Amino acid sequence: MAFSTLDAVRASFEEARDTLFAFLADPKNLEAVERFADAAAATLDRGGLLMSCGNGGSMCDAMHFAEEWTGRFRGNRSALAAVAFSDPSHLTCIANDFGYEEVFAREVEAYGKAGDLLVAISTSGNSPNVLRACEAARERGITIVGLLGKGGGKMRDMVDIPIIVPNATTSDRIQEVHIKVLHIAIEAVERRMFPENYA
Image (cartoon, rainbow, N blue to C red; front, side):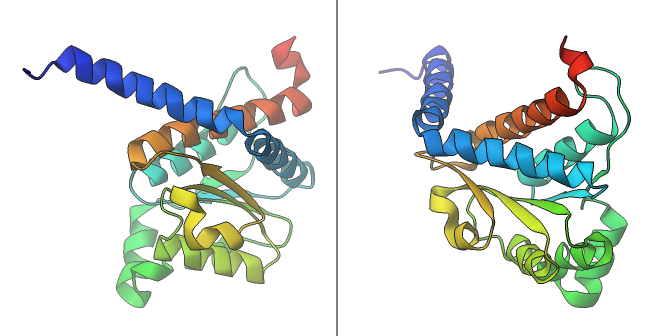
């Protein structure tokens, strides 16, 4: 049978739909997203910092998460404190001096304090530099949300709020759910802090 691009496109959309439906089918996943939103709101209420990190596409998600707080999500409101560990000068300096596994942990050490929140993103749950960031956060009393896949890996037991995409075996399908979780958590916080934007 000849290869059909249309069939491949349809199959990919259906696989993405099935991954999302599998996530929604487990009430524990929705409860974990609610806990994520509650933790982010509590952090912001007490003047804390939201931090995020990840590699590759997960770094893009970490950056996207941070800019939604400092910029605008749905409507105009005050800027909120969030940072993604993505500055090339910091990353390459730390990698050169201490090794790539330390690139995020050093930034947690520099910016994080008790009562802050770290969103640690890893589709495998086993990224060494994200694991080290979690270790540094735990040492400082920082709440950790893990956006994970493939069963959660080592990070599953290192984070306070694990959010694990079920069934998916590829990073792209996992990341598609991760960005939905990030957007929905942000919306939930905004609805609480800025209800006028949702009137």
